[in-house]
Image 1 (cartoon, rainbow, N blue to C red):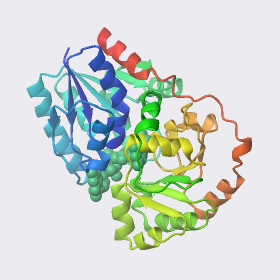
Image 2 (image 1 turned 90 degrees about the vertical axis):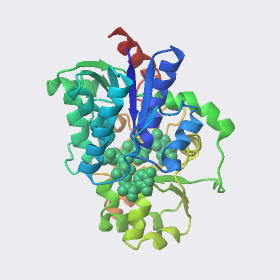
Image 3 (image 1 turned 120 degrees about the horizontal axis):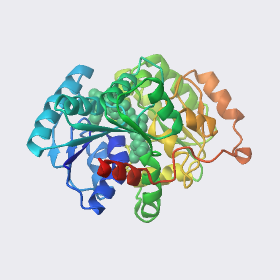
Image 4 (image 1 turned 30 degrees about the horizontal axis):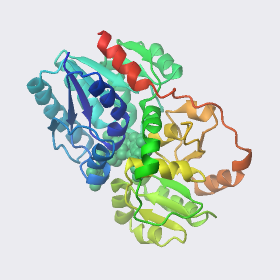
Length: 357
Ligand code: UD1
Ligand code: UDP
């Protein structure tokens, strides 16, 4: 069976890494196809280097563009690559444009399509990710749901494919790489003793000037210094809205390049708490070797399990509300439940299931 592991963006590379390692260890016949949706070194290649992944067999150079253009170019490139590589099973992960393109290309060629991280729903239709994940779930014949809750959503929507609850591979990645991170993480800036870790990159936040201004108010009013590894989309939008200098000049704000995964693991482990709109970070915060409170800068989440386990708190995008919720948090009394995303063996379970096909 010839497997194609499709990746395109930072979180897909990180979350596919445990599956790639498992395929490699079992000597399976597989290819890695990178669409090139993310192309800058610090959001793409660095993860192949740090996680010691084999180089992609195909790099499609899709790059940036409008939603349709990016998805369409990835679809055309992936169809050609599956044809040339004689792919039989396609694996996609998450909810990006690369994922939807991979699933569409696969079903239109009559291939097996496996969706890793299936069944997540935010019910927020402003997000391109919401329809990407929905459409991909309905196009796939193997659905790897991270939790029983996601599996239940898939059942309620009567998807065609077989549903398997596996946990989330991001927990595997945290557990596999923390010890390496402790030895190898390198920072080109000084780490304060105490800091809040910040990330914000989602289109519905950073493409909105008023939301960005609100976030600046939050950063300006926090008592603890902040480290913000800024995503290229966010950097572009802060500059476009003429807010970049204000961000850079906030006292206590360390605005840094996007970090490698090893560095980011250490930053998550050692911070006071996390302020983010990221999906993956909401999950990583629940890993036993990270265990951090996350204030989610969004109106909804497709990761309600992290909220139920008391790791994540949805705080919206209103600056006063965010500051109020942060002030109410007392780290000393915080006692979350067990992490809901599995024990770190999701990659192994997924590869077991694929091999049974
Ligand atoms: C994409 C995903 C999002 C995911 C994020 C992970 C979709 C619809 N969105 O968002 O779900 O959370 O990746 O980080 O698939 N850019 C660069 N260099 C790069 C890549 C992007 O400068 O290497 C800039 C470009 O200006 C580009 C913008 O970022 O237009 C947005 O990139 P894009 O891949 O379209 O979406 P992300 O916001 O990165
Ligand atoms: N991450 C990283 N360096 C950073 C910021 C994030 O390695 O500077 C990792 C993080 O640990 C997580 C993933 O990138 O595994 C999350 O990606 P992102 O927030 O871009 O996307 P999302 O998860 O929201 O789709």
